[in-house]
Length: 153
Image 1 (cartoon, helix red, strand yellow):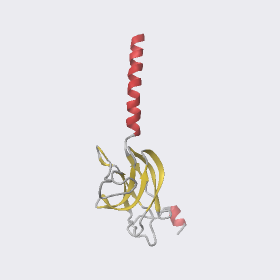
Image 2 (image 1 turned 45 degrees about the horizontal axis):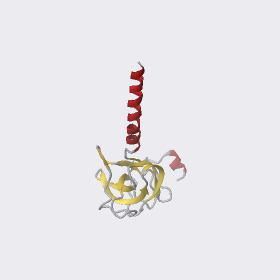
Image 3 (image 1 turned 90 degrees about the vertical axis):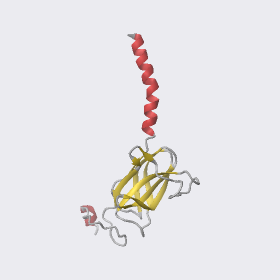
Image 4 (image 1 turned 120 degrees about the horizontal axis):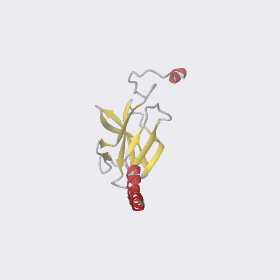
């Protein structure tokens, strides 16, 4: 019985780093639907396998289109990152995409060497909606104002 317990302990000890490392390096990006604040949106969470970028793209026929904002991200997990958007090109339906930093380090080069990071399911993305856009920002897609937004109109 003692040999069986030792064998199980050794197997668990050998497997634990594998599971811990792979869980922490799974790339993802998460952005929730939100309104603009100071011309920016907030990326809730991101996990990058190496330093890279989160780029906000206008959704074009269900796919990421032109880039309207970008922020660098370090390797590993990050949260609550602010991305300033180009208000002249903003739309209501947006896609946050995790990109590599493969070209000139510290310079976002897309299209080019800073391609989207992919997983078995495809590019690492998070689709979201700019809720309640009003005024000069042309992103009204017919969404009703929330009670809180309506209180401030």
